[in-house]
Amino acid sequence: MRCKVDYLVIGTGMAGLIYALKVADHGKVCMLSKTNLDDTATSVAQGGIAAVMYSPDNYEKHIKDTVGAGAGLNDENIVRITITESTERIEELIDWGTQFDKEKTGKYALAKEGGHSEHRILHHKDSTGFEIQRALSERVRQHPNIEVFEDYFAIDLITQHHMGMEVSRHNNIVCYGAYALNKASGQVETLLAKTTMIATGGIGNIYQTTTNPAVSSGDGIAMAYRAKAQVEKLEFVQFHPTSLYHPGERPSFLITEALRGAGGILKTKKGELFMHKYDSRESLAPRDIVARAIDNEMKLSGDEHVYLDARHLEKEAMINHFPKIYAKCLSIGIDMTKDMIPVVPAAHYSCGGIKTDADGRTSIQNLYATGEVASTGLHGANRLASNSLLESAVFSHRAALEVVKDIDQIPYEDKLPDWDFEGMKLNE
Ligand code: SIN
Image 1: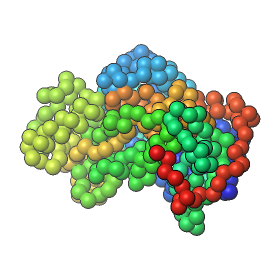
Image 2: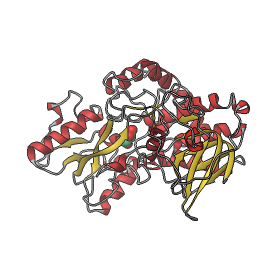
Image 3: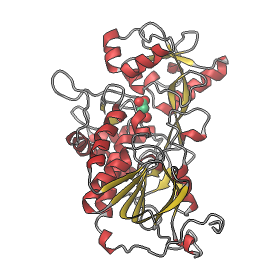
Image 4: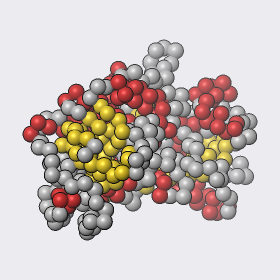
């Protein structure tokens, strides 16, 4: 057995890190990364994190925008919880050392993105996720109760099934930890845990083009499904309208929606405006509408991309707010202050996933899920821009508060067999 802990956390993006930091004051934590601690979708998130910070914004407006973007298929109770807890969670991230951009007045500089009726996106230039990951990773690495196993690939959640018992979705299924492949030794090891949190992120890499890093390959959802956890709404896959058109590059480089929020305008390859035909909010409509509009224009014209035009925007402000995008475009010969940026939709976010309640509980006892892998009900059919990092902050916090309550009452299941693929009967 490789470890015996109170809290096993699979995945090291923002959702897993926040949860780990919060439960670590109540017991031993083991975190697994398939590669390394900072190789996560959080690290490449550009635009920011949505939250209600100042008037004239308020919770009701953010709730309305979230439900509007989600086509009304959101769980309104979950939406309300998320939005009304947003300000507190942002304050916590700031206390933990995250630096968001500020205006000269000292107030936080808030950007606007598609589907938002107000400026409410906190950001760190165009590398917001990287900054959040930096602040949280530093704390995790220093915490004496958290051990991080890098290059460990979780392959199966351990339930009664592995002890030879019949398991069906109607039984009380219990999770006892996970089997994970130690990539260095080639051995599958047993990780025994009182509670297990899946925070493995999304599924982008099952598509030909995606903005997600290679680690977002859907194996967390697959593992939970094999263990007979309830999964839902997997049909709601969000395509980001503007990934950089650069054939052969994988993952696709994201051109943040905040660039449209700053005034960037979509045009056809011929340089013609088209978004007015699809939505009165034009280039700042919610991203499902914009992605479908671009797809339609590409089908009508036969072109392989459209353009995002930022040439009319103030040069210094552009370079200062979007240094990463500016540098990336320049590296392939596009100066976004003089040239239009070729863009195309790419798979970006899974709105569905492992079904959880308002405290991160799945349908399996002692198994929790948080972040993109979870389906909390916040997003409905389409996620409002920059609501995902917020969802991670809110539900990792809530799950942590819940899971620590009964941890002393949960026994370890010491009779777990070693991983035996040959002898493993399929859990059908
Ligand atoms: C973006 O910066 O456009 C992506 C942010 C998000 O997916 O919410």
